[in-house]
Length: 307
Image (cartoon, rainbow, N blue to C red; front, side, top):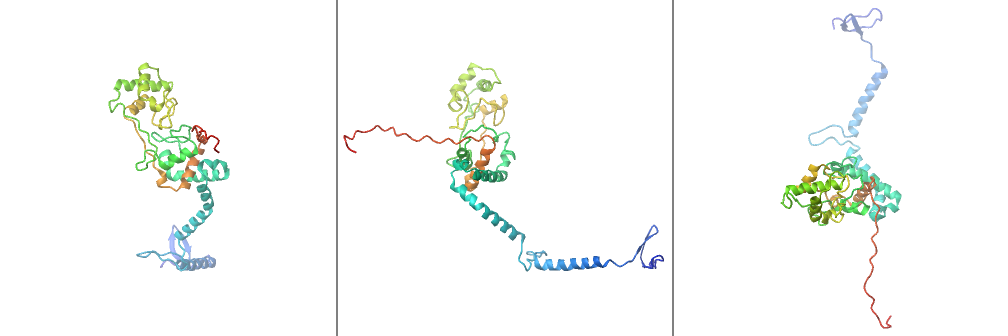
């Protein structure tokens, strides 16, 4: 540049730039910096040859080493599967009601179930499994179909009102108002009776009689529900939708019926056991009840001395 000149103080030529009286000396770059720069260039060329680096029209360069991030991921997955294989085999071989007999296996099942829950269940039940309107809270001890490990596993496998699954949990409440089984006045009377069961309304004889005639067959004469039919307990403060009089009347008029997927069609048995173990561990799980042995009540037949 025309403004280049030798700096008198240092004897070094300037680069020709000047700003507000300040000029830059054209000193040579430090040797260590130059060699580091050259080394980076060499490393970049070597890396481009050895590893995938340059995008092409159809695909990128593969590199002479044949390394890929997908291949590395596949190795990690295979390694993790090998690590989990003994645990999954033990889970598959252990009836779910016997998991508590093996605390170490139970802990492994709960940990695996927690991960599976985050992938498959949080969309409806929430990250903390507290549920929301229309989706049950899995932390409490209110169970429509039973809260022991075996019952939870059955619910997870077959779902709730899942089309195409012959063993799905099914309970359908009649639409008493919509189908003209009850008048609007009678719906209001039953609503008040249900509120009285929860201590939030005054008892009324008409509502009690209507409840006995139409609702007690599923919910029980005192409204405490029945797991045989999946009928909820109406005497506590737990409600799937709401405890308000309007919500109760709406459910009597035109009941809502949710659907839970039959996860047995989507997940392997070991994962389902882990999910059941995790849900059971959330706080409301019940102890498994052994079925009473069948008693042979066939009358004894005299054999007249025959053995």
